[in-house]
Length: 129
Image 1 (cartoon, rainbow, N blue to C red):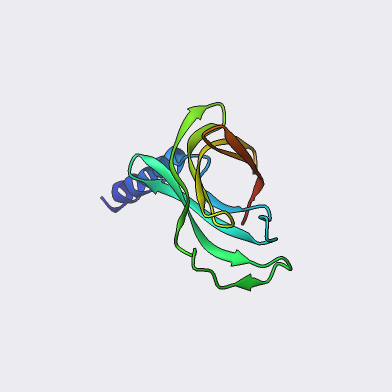
Image 2 (cartoon, rainbow, N blue to C red):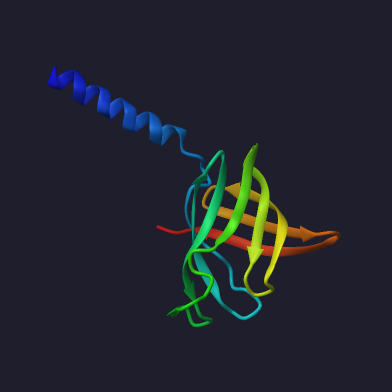
């Protein structure tokens, strides 16, 4: 009986890991207009994906305090297929939320955001360990 329970537990864990979205995990942003960057934790939030700022770094790469820690930088994000995602992205340096297009390719994430007809390149984020 213990062997069956163990096998069931392993199968359940493996199935959960297999169902994780490739965007989930830690991402290091590119530097913003002020030279600051952040570490974003992407995880499910309801039936969509969100990415919270968990650490902030100054232009020299030193960790710094930020009023935006814990804030969703990525929200309402859904997969469109072939590594493409759409949703919302918040830009702390401009205090604006943009409609976002994200393109995942391996361990890099190309980020773009638009408000009306004004679009902004959010740079290429890299997967953190």
